[in-house]
Length: 353
Image (cartoon, rainbow, N blue to C red; front, side, top):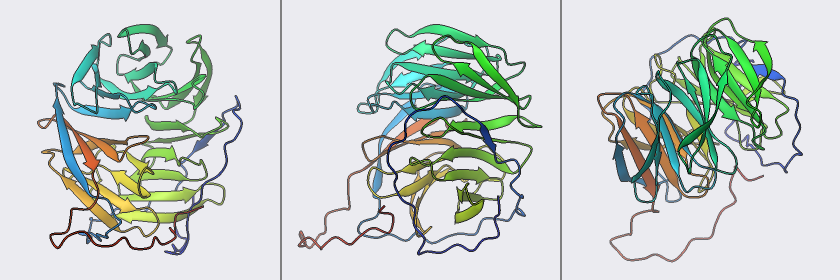
């Protein structure tokens, strides 16, 4: 992918229609991205606007005893799952912040989790070389997927939840039948451990990344037309993978050591959300690339963030000694002390399709 293309504030992404599900899933690897020279992050101003985000802390969740590696909202928005190096998967209520149950069975630390599309099952990837599929309501492990020869670092369901893809420290990617728990294919995709794998919307492509490059995390955009990547040069990039061009670069946070994920937020405005090694959560306007809000409160590196599928809610999780999960909610702009102002006419969004 070419990172030399010029970026334009006038360029915008777009929505696209639903695409029929397919079973084929060739891998689109981003290991060939030319690594840009690492640079020290420069403090970036926060551009706040009346129609920008106004997230505030709602709940702080504690219970994990080691660094938290992943948080994910269920597709129906009712539950939040988290996992950690303490081997436990925890299920929470994002509405109340209460712990619902623990999913125990892995014998070593966990790195990733993924929900099935009906919010019934959860897949977890572990250093014990296995992937477990959990029935979340019962708390029982229904299948144990075995076949990786080393720690499993990442896992994801496809949209129809018929397939599971996983990445391992030995560089291999495996494609599994979710119903049978059987490995369908092994791809010798990378030279170092695979840090992220993700299906596009119709499961016709898988994107992956590895420590054989600077890229640490990748995922398709909700419309599957773009790829979002994080890297160890303190930058997040939005790619058009069909033209191999970098469309946007988001900077201002700190990321030069850990594998930190970023994600899309589309319930209110269109934001890019990421953790950071300066213990903060950053939000950028997807189109303008401006930092529109910085969330502070964590006491260590924020490794994982997730956005609610329907509500303006963000979950963020941190390393030890913090060991906290924070739930942030956007309640809208604060009321003016001068009293309510008449509503302003809405302007067309640059991110509209």
